[in-house]
Image 1 (spheres, helix red, strand yellow):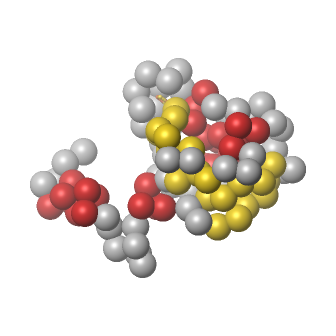
Image 2: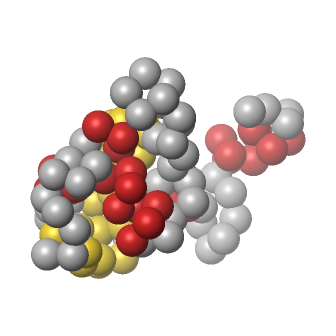
Length: 95
Ligand code: FES
């Protein structure tokens, strides 16, 4: 069992320690923010914050998150509203 905080909530997952964090987030924890792109730490579509530092979750073993805070795009909202940066992307229809 691997335990960490995900977007402010304590979570525990029964996943192999070497399983890439991206797949645990998508498949076990049903988070939609990070995406699978290249799968080789090159495109950044799987980026999440690990204790505030941007990491590529497609090449990060889940055990690296033990006891730490993982923040995805969903965790950047406040009361379901987008952050100022997210709102700027929405307003400008940026990708
Ligand atoms: S999927 Fe491209 S960097 Fe992770």
